[in-house]
Length: 130
Image (tube, rainbow, N blue to C red; front, side):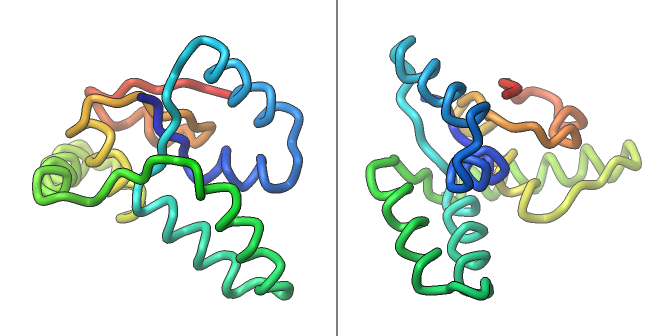
């Protein structure tokens, strides 16, 4: 399974040809696409605070309706806490939400599709650039 980061989904919602092509390519090679609960939250939060909340909420709900959503389990939270410590020790902290996303994908040994370069600081996660 391959998890999509928030950045790729936002670009997909905006109709980005790069995002559309990347997701199409993943599907064609047989990857099952998922998102983390944190990504779902970030998308819904963004829609709620937007100037066109109802329209954007409908778009977000539609875009994630057929995706598997990876829960923030106790194991994923434990993994995220290890990641936070590792990053803190190296002086490379990233946002708490991204630590939780990284913890979820590393715990489940999934790849993460993203353009956010700060995930490169997290050891042991498979990154797919788009």
